[in-house]
Length: 74
Image (cartoon, rainbow, N blue to C red; front, side):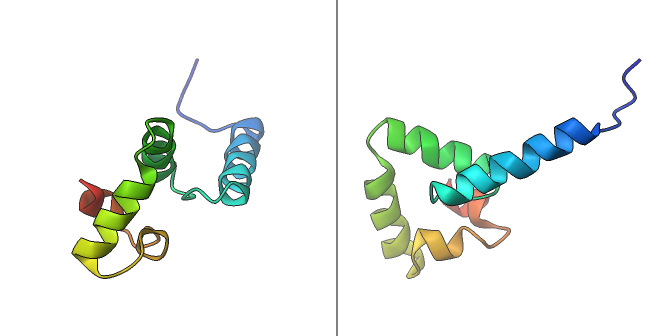
C-alpha cells in the first residue's frame, strides 16, 4: 500500500540527481532543469538565456535561483 511516504532510496535518488544537475550546470530545481534540458536539446537554450537577460536585466543562471523564475521563464 502506497501512503505517499518516501523511502530512503527515493531521497537518495533526489540528492544524487540534484548533484548531477549541479555538476552539469543545470538548475537544481527539477522543473527548471527540465526546461533547460529541453531547450538545450532543441538548440534554443542560448537564445532563451539572451532573451531572458534582455528582458529581466539579469542573467538567467543567477535569476533561476529565485522562486519565481519558472513563471518568469514563460
